[in-house]
Image (cartoon, rainbow, N blue to C red; front, side, top):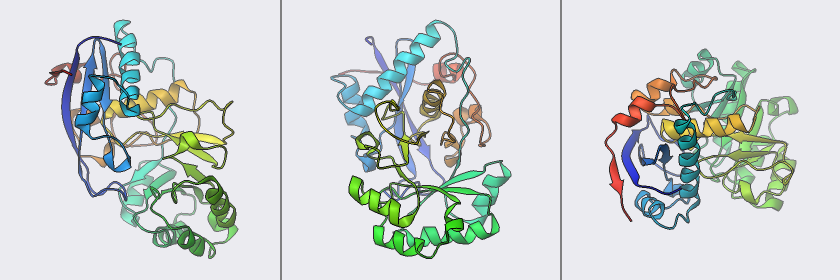
Length: 312
């Protein structure tokens, strides 16, 4: 896809710490415009992405980085739909989402349940025992809630197994999966899954997974969904990259067009202070509200942004 590239930088302000890899609460990225198409470029250097300036230079040049290549894929899809004056979501159904909790507490959990969520995802900032122990305690009061716990590879296998040894089979049934509990290694994951008695989800190294994980967590900002004919996997859960609502909409569209039925993680705009873009996505709840407009939506808001030509 060729043409003049334009960028509009943004900063998202989170309400608190978003994962165990960073203490940042102000996240910077850029919306990109190429021809009729719009996309989002939102690097997470803590997760191995190049810095924003390096990504922008790559976008204007060779486009070697995976994050940049996926931004181009978004631009192409969005442009094709806008030229035809149609929404990318026309005729598609976006899967429901879990709640992404900014912290693990009774107050935050109750707010998620009041919004209609039945599944919640929590980020563990500890080795494993403390988070699992708190989930076990909360499950006594809210036994119908299903939990997804993301360790961002920061857990310790021995600590996780030590805590899970206290759980009954029935107690473990409230856990959907443990995501990236430790750094990925096929054999180690098989042992942790077997001895812990819980499904494991692979996010960071999902492309390398050869069936050791029960779940693949796919972020369309950096990965394509995997053809189930090539990889033996029970399910794929699609999530946003905790990025701008334009990027969030791209993730929702990828899940919808792939026909994903599993509960996903596409409602993350509530983690940030509201603005005109988040308002178009509405109140955070299990159901994704498709933004009005052509392509990925947000037509008027995108046109009004300050755009600066990107040069190599």
